Length: 500
Ligand code: NAD
Image (cartoon, rainbow, N blue to C red):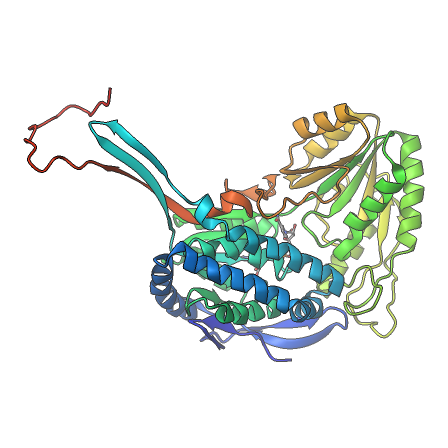
C-alpha cells in the first residue's frame, strides 16, 4: 500500500525527514507500509507557507469560508465508504463503526457552519463621553491539532472544522498508526475549495510533536490522546505561550441501581464497553452495581450478551468489533487480565485465547469480564484501552458515587435507574464532564461542548460547541469616538478616566 505523506501547501510530499515508522493492518498483523516522518525543517517550511495562507483565508468573508465547510460536508458524505475502508484497514474497527464515527465528524462540520453566529461580537453605544465600544473575534493564526489513533476521522474533523471556519491555518498531526484517513481528508479539503496552505498534515511521533510545541509561529494546540502525553503537551505548549486544549484519558463508570431495567443496562454495558474493542475514550470500563442481588442478576445478563459477540476483521459481515490497534495493545490487555486475577478479581469471561480463523496473527482480543474488582486493583486504577471490563459492587448510591469520584479521571459517567432523585444526585455530585442517565455513552452532539473534568482534560476549552470557536479566536475590544469636526481640544486629563 502507498504511504500517506505530508500535505503541505496543497501538495503531498515525503518531507525532509529521514525517519519512518510502520503502519500495521491490525487484522492481519502485517506492516502495510512505512510512514515517512516529518522533521523540524519540514515544519519550518510548512509554517512559512501556512502563515500567509492563513492570513489571507482569515480575511475572506464568513460566507466564503462557510461555503467551503458546506462543500466539505458534502464530500465527506460522498466518500464515506472510502474513509470507512481507510479507518478499518489501519485502526481495525468495523466498517459500520467507522461509518458511525464519520457521522459524528460530520456534526463538527455542520456546527462549524454556524461560525458567523457564534463568533459575532458585542457592541455598546456610549459607554461614556460619547465613546462606542465593540468587541470582535479574529483567528489566532496557525493552529496545530494532534490526534489519537482511535478516531481517525471524527477527532481530526472535531478539532479542525471550527479552526478552518474561524479563519485559521491548520496543521494536523494524525496518529502515526492511522495516517491514511487524514491524507484523504486533505484531498477533500482541496476539492472543497480550501486555498492551498490553509490545511496541512505532518506525520510522525513524539519528535514532531515536540517541534510543534516549540514552534514560535504556532499559536494554539488542540490535543486528543492519553493523559500521560496530554499533560506533557499542555505543560510544554503553555510554557511556550500557546493556548492549549488537551482532551485525555478516561475510566468511565456506569452505576446500576436495583430499580434499573437490567436487560437494558446489560445491553448498554456490553455495547458501550466492548464496542470498538473498548478503544473509545468514552467506553464504559467499569460497572458499579448497587446491591449483591442486583449485581448477580446483571452479571448473568452481561455474560449472556458477551457470549454472543462476534470478533473479526473490519470487513467481516456481522462482526461486533475488530482487533486492537497493535501487538503492544494486545499484550497490555492480556497483562491487565492476568494481573486482575493475581490481585483477587474473579475472571468471569476470559477472551485471551481468541483465534480468528484466517487472521491468526491479527491483534485480536476476545471480550473479558472481571467481577469483584476493588479500588486497590490495577484494573480499576488504570485506563485499559481494550476489551476487558470490570464489575464492582457497592452497598448504596453513596458508595457508588464515592467510587466514581475517587478515580483520577472524569471524562464520562452514566447511571441506570428509574429514580429521578438518584439521577439528580448523580448529575450534581459526580465529577465527570459528560454524564448520561440511562445513556451509556453520553457524547455531546456537535453544538454542545465536549470535554471531561479532572485528569481527563487540561485547559479550559472544549471540543465541539461554541467553546471551540472561542478557543480558535482571539478577542479585541475597541473604544471609538468621533469628535465633531470643529470641536475644541479639552486639554490634558491626567486622572484615570471615569465614565460616570
Ligand atoms: P497517545 O497519547 O499515545 O497519542 C496521541 C498523540 O500524541 C498521537 O498523535 C501521538 O503521535 C502523540 N504522542 C504519542 N506519544 C507522544 C510523546 N511521548 N510525546 C509527544 N507526542 C506523543 O494516545 P493514543 O494511544 O493514540 O489514543 C488513545 C488515548 O486517547 C486514550 O487514552 C484515550 O482515552 C484518549 N482519547 C481521549 C479522547 C477525549 O476526548 N478525551 C478522545 C479519544 C481518545
